Image (cartoon, rainbow, N blue to C red; front, side, top):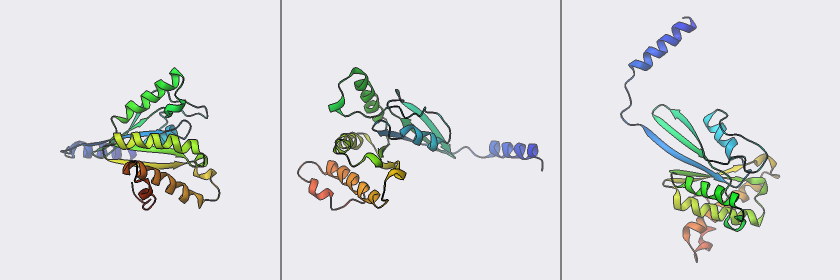
Length: 191
């Protein structure tokens, strides 16, 4: 077969295939603080460069939607501006970016929380993450996915397990509510 014949046969086969009765769509909102790699993650998930990436904070100013189709399933990824905690929300610019992130979470079936594993030791990072996790728990309809990014910068690699346990126990503590946070440390495998 020549390449042209192969393309023709493939096109004919697609036309003859029955149309799936149900299409499935999943809305996935990618959230995290500024400069944790949300746009890079979006670009790699949809296998094309859609979102601008830069080392500069707040490169993403508006919600960006990227779609990945596989057979009869559609994954709609929403890249959001960096989430700014309320305590840092002094300028009008940052309030607007926070509002865009928060409003994007309303359409989420799944929320992907992206964190920078190399910066995770700071107390300020934990406070911002707790606020973000609370928003994700309120808004996600199906699942919350924790994504550790920049793991190549963490040494020794065994620290990654501790970082994961810390963040999962924070999520579990928020889910359990005030007064039951101590139970969150018992099970850090699921959230």
